[in-house]
Length: 192
Image (cartoon, rainbow, N blue to C red):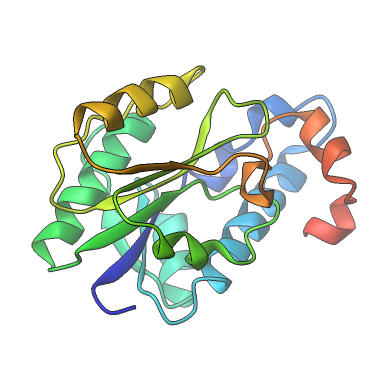
């Protein structure tokens, strides 16, 4: 998978998973966030991973795992994705996967490189966008947040490139709220 790479925006572990405050302590949320992101990095063996972050603890953690680091120069997830895409394009990476760091079942993630054009993986509710695969030289405006899947699909359609939407896959499971923990059928012990 020469000239391929994975971009992984990662928030500060101390401020991660605030929607899980009702069921997890701050230290449990940080541990969960770190563990999920580590699993995503581990399944990307053989392909460079760039962690996009604004936090020194996350930067140190990423470097210890063998990932490269891009410091986010723009606020939020949309800014992180844009910063990362621009940076790896300058490095000669031709195709990237931009993935959430909280995928519950990341195994097989690199199989998404098998598809040409733009790959969109919505969350299990067909609302958010868990993974986007695309060429690094594309002019693409990231639109994360509630309802992002339809916005990303509309953006992809403007590119006139082939689009592959992958629904109902394990990549649609991410950890945003207490229902996600329940629906994954995994315990905290399984995830940390």
